[in-house]
Image 1: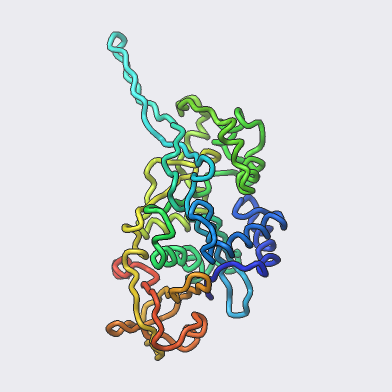
Image 2 (image 1 turned 45 degrees about the vertical axis):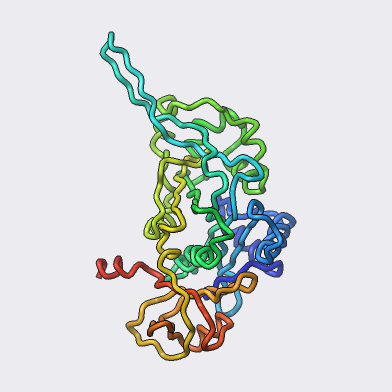
Length: 343
């Protein structure tokens, strides 16, 4: 498996992926709009756009050149139009005469993530969710950021999908958003995925919302990820991401964040020299980047580090389109300390 920049020729494969991602607004399920995004991603990797407009769209491809997954990093959010989240705070009120004090969780509309880079558009074909494929698809973006930190903000964020029922209905949306937007959750989520977010600024109430006024079902899902997002949360939490009280305004899913300097893959990755050999069977899995931007290729393999060299097999070098002696950026795929504890 390799991760590489998405190409315009990937349009049919990505359309097929989007149609499998039912209930997930990962990419516009519209051929014309998806084609536009692919063309824009090509310009992004060619450094022809500003950071505010950058859309680094990747695909996961197997050795038969079949696209089985997609992921992306947005260069900066909120610099072209407002980027909204709710911040979960606390309102304290008291009456000495009655001897009553109340601490009420309160939702405050926030633009504090403006200018940060966002991990987004992650989807892996269900039959490929085995082994390390999901981890490669998610973490390859972090290794790319480690190689080109000047292209991104000083913090990475990720909006995780919030709780919803089997029909895709969100209890938080039904208790909050529906009153102001007069549309179903799926319709609002679809409009946002298409890039039509101006309606949020036009219709979202500016006043704080007391959570005690919401239904019990809506209160219960605030900051809770959808069951299908728990694996992504686990992977990113191990990298240093944490929930600091921000939630998605549509479904109340957690917004997790991490400064670049605190992210394991960014912090621990190293520039090494590629060498060809036969790593032993006990060698750990490494994630390796060929250090290119427009022709970026990232893969995982068993590798052995000797001094400043990283020894891999010939197939890995071929996947990376590199020769012995070329420079790579590599990092163990998993935190070695956590692996040792688990063992």
